[in-house]
Length: 315
Image (cartoon, rainbow, N blue to C red; front, side):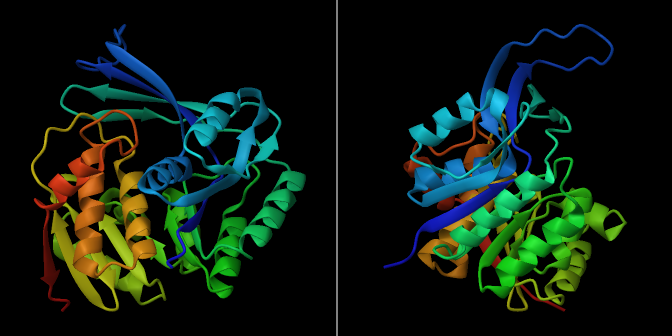
């Protein structure tokens, strides 16, 4: 039987405060039309989706002890195993303003400070979990106290133990993680452009840069392009998917949902076309709603039938 156990690592979790607004007016008073507050952070979003799909998920990372209750409630509600290291202070609150056309403005705060003692506790937890888990998802930004070198070393250790590490981050953390050659990386086109040091607007430019990553030992390079779909390099072969045209409500969590979809596909050992069409459909569903999650799998299946997947010649 396939092992459906997954560990997600969220080093800098957040309470995501999402507000709906007709149009954001800078320097003026803005009236929020709708709002909600949910436990978040990229790894936690991935964990929530995977748990709803049917995976046995363990979450870890660093969680502020002052506002941990919403996180604990989510983990209990979704039957997610809680292995977070508690640290002094409150996890950050990130503000996401969603305008009616679907444009999102993120106000991301720095987060908690992590002590060396907490770092050592997390390393012991990861070592213990590695004895019984083969799939790890490390996603999100780094809090104060965690160096990019430390992130690189954690991914390296897990990879050397034969673990499949799914990695999703941005900026300096993305660059550091890529050095460790994780099993799968999922930058979007903007994040990949930042890493490459130049704007990558054409598909050919994205493929070229993706090939460069693939040559470093990364098994799977997944590039998300919003409404343009997903590019996936594996074993020297590119596949591309195109989602159906849908009304975008919010793009919050769409990338995290794509990572969860690729992870779920790997756990089920699906073929490449099925894997990519499912992950693309799952991500498409995410943009039709404000909250991250999969309430109705039949909606995903309906979108999946509308996703096109094609092989791209790799010159």
